[in-house]
Image (cartoon, rainbow, N blue to C red; front, top):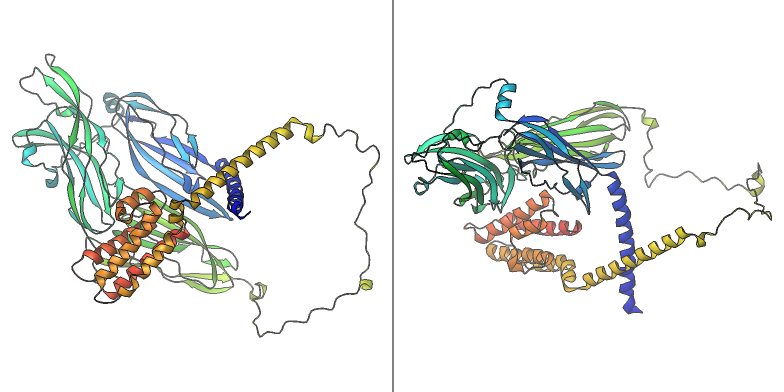
Length: 639
């Protein structure tokens, strides 16, 4: 009998979990709504359309929409934002995805339905239609605008000498080669061409391991310059720009990938005339005796080295949590005078330039005179000025417990300014709240242990309780009460269909429970479950080295414990575990905050093992505590 206990237990667990998942999926699917919009409805060739997809009620189960392959558009992601609200005990989520579509042909264009995946269900959006005008139509319908000033290309974008003379080539370059952690470095792709060409996107995307990537939207037609290089006249165009935020210190090399372009090869023209106004636009042929053919080209460029510096240890405030950029902080309440028991909303706004995705908002201190509820948070990220900037808003509901005058203390936020190379501490003003009401009408506090309780009243005797009325009425069955009942339930077709469906569903969950139990008892499942316990034992081996003079031994033992833990979690050998592998496997499972903590822990271990200067005892102790807390939190979140 004991041998069947695991099977029975797993079968019951499968039935329960499967039932809840099925009902949960039904209710979740019923609440999901998807809205799509595109602005404007009419634009010229090369001018951007802004596509917005809003998914409501999907929670964390929504995945980025899959745009179809467009023949007449180039599409670029402009980021997305997440909003979560708690209103009257009900949680509402809202995911907003934004894209830029650049049309390449005039006419009435149709955008077919876009697939959105929520959990295990797939949804299809409606069809969108736009009108695209040609260059001549746009010129006739719009007021003439002044031409932009021609700006010479950056020196970093200029090619090496061995590239000059080629018909077309690409150069990937960065605005700076040395940055701090979380300081943006801008990677730009510049195409040089002496013939008519059309940029077709990327054949191989760039490899940016170790960086948080934000892509800037295109500017419509690529901004063009002209320059004489090595005796050749080139048209120069920046076709793509990325913002890269390094997550840890070290030496990196970015593999820029491979670009695609259609190049016009012109035969029969001895003068090789150059049509600069056709670059990346519509083709115009002015020589009838020239034979022109278009052939695809793959354009490659050199790797880009970047040196990432750690944060300066001198002057680092205690509350610094890795935020880099330039920010402003505000705190306010929706009302400063309320009645006792009525809610007050505290709004904290953090605005500025930087990677707000991973920035942690200031923590609300403990307010003993208020009940505190997290209500909503939102992130608005903008990249239209070719700077990653935006605003992060956190709303907290405060419910006063009693009347009186109260004060919400000042909130602080610390960030590192890479331009001035110093830490900056922002503080909000304290907020005063006047709570009105009768103190006697408020709920009384619980009595102290020393307070004597009033004596309980003596129980009433049965004779002292008068009988007011009888409330029980008996049912009487007559001989004719069975007439008109119809066909018995067990003889109906619906009954047997329901019974067959229930039996089939039960067999399915029994099989699922058996498979789940088998997987849990397999070696991989045991290894995954025991990962934390094994990691703690390994972590204890690092504790004896937690003393001055044994820094290398300490960080080696700590690294062995951490690598072993992630190896057990991922089903890999400890030697095969790296930060890149963890990020690729857990990109969808972990929050941005957890990924940042993992990166910081690996950076601390690498610094402790390979740095010339020895770490201090406080740094070693902090690394030990960070490793233990991180592994415990990941287990608690069942990652």
